[in-house]
Image (cartoon, rainbow, N blue to C red):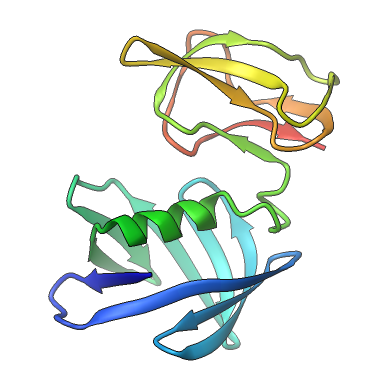
Amino acid sequence: MKFQIEGNTNKINAELVYNKGSGDLLFVIDDQKYNLKLLKSTSNEFEFILENTYHYVKILPSTETKYKIYIDGIVVEIKKHSKITEIIEKTLKSKGTAYQANNVTSQIPGRVVKVSVSKGDKIKEGDPIMVLESMKMQIAIKSHKEGTIKEIKVKEGSTVSRNEIVAIIE
């Protein structure tokens, strides 16, 4: 997956090669292998150790053509390409990470129309958890795994952003 950092003419080829589970990931960046240990992951913030060095990353509000990312105190702009969108979305939705595995996130920004489950409910993979409305369309957010609802983080009528955590399954 190739992407380009603003102000740099070279394209970077990066790929998530293997998710070892428990936050251990293997990336290949420009043919060089890197082990990454994910410590904390939310919808727009990450803390990780890469090559024995701690890093903090926050995804800032973006435009239609660029992502803005805060990395260890520096704001970096990355030109949007379908490939970088794919790698970011894949990382945000990675099921093998310790913190992401139980999080249910919204696929779209919108308004919560209906919450279909309550704390303590037993659910199966594919069960609807809630319904969002965006641009007059309703989209069901479904469970990605079997479990018990530990927490519902939103209420009917509230608004959510894309990739926001809306529920937690244990």
